[in-house]
Amino acid sequence: MKRIDKAKKIGKILDNLYPETPIPLDHSSSYTLLVAVMLSAQTTDKKVNEVTPYLFKLADNPHAMSMLDINQIEKAIKQIGLAPTKAKNLKKLSEILVKNGGMKPSWSFLESLPGIGHKTASVVMSQWYGFPAFPVDTHIHRLASRWGLSKAKNVIMTERDLKKIWHKDLWNKLHLQIIFFGREYCPARNHNMLECPICSWASSKKRIKAEMSI
Image (cartoon, rainbow, N blue to C red; front, top):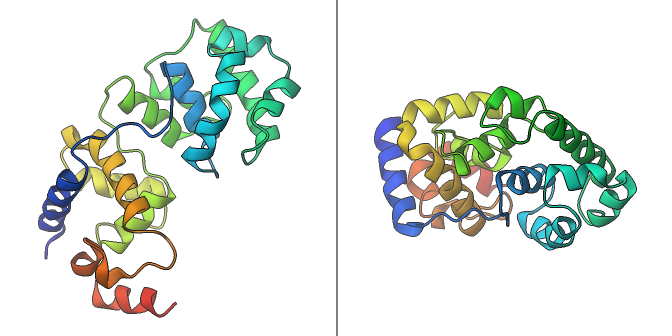
């Protein structure tokens, strides 16, 4: 099956399973979304949502966050991974936002902030500002490989491959649909690919045999 035909079939399956695509990270503004996505690196969305209510009670805007001591921020997010580094970056990026007049719908500006990479910037640009983007994390990278949609060795190259397959009007929705599907049906470990709604037919026999033997 050609990749474009496979992508269409996958898209229909995802639309049926996830017609609605709510953002899994709790937020109330572009800034709180940026913070939540940044904090989610190397931890779960669930854990971030447990931490941010208290953090945002302390400060839910750049000015308030910039006024906090780094130790206060670190204490508020200590339950998540890399808390010391994230606390430093959170204070620094908040100070920069204050100096520059707040959040801006700009990839280059967002990616220039401490602790903010292309994926985090893309999430904010797509899910808050509505720009077409296809944020690819390690989970989407893994599924794209399993489904034979990309042979790329890194997330940047996988992003380019997926953007070529699907129309840009679908990118923002598909990004979340694939994440939801991965959590519910296609985990990284102990995955029975023969019973998966997508892997069972989209993955190559060689890939299925290799993963099922692990």
